[in-house]
Image 1 (spheres, rainbow, N blue to C red):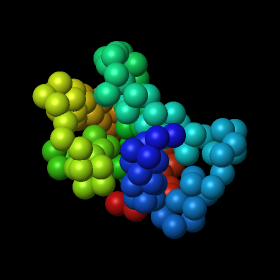
Image 2 (image 1 turned 30 degrees about the vertical axis):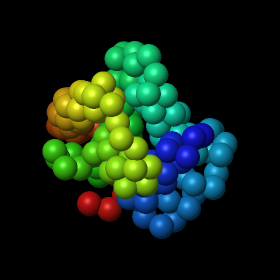
Image 3 (image 1 turned 45 degrees about the vertical axis):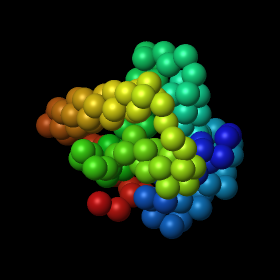
Image 4 (image 1 turned 45 degrees about the horizontal axis):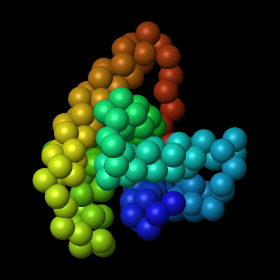
Length: 142
């Protein structure tokens, strides 16, 4: 992972409870830690695509994986919160990089897409709950 990917991953995992956070950070086995592994993979894809060729489908798929995991663990989305807002903050605060217009446009596009994915995912979760399918949330405070 690049330093940007590491910092963003750590900030995402920081939103979890202490025990879950430690496990997600330390356990590298994909089978034992599917949440941490999925976040790591998604973070890598999004950062690579953001600064590279930017395949919209590839990025949307990675972002969707993150949002689905988050929704099942109490993640809430607003225009000032979310994974992409967190990435913007990491870039601004830690890397202090001046981003070109294209990367800024891509970030804005991703932020908007995150909101769309969040809305669809929450609707699906609600439909499942109404059908009596239990979705257990744990590991993440509200």
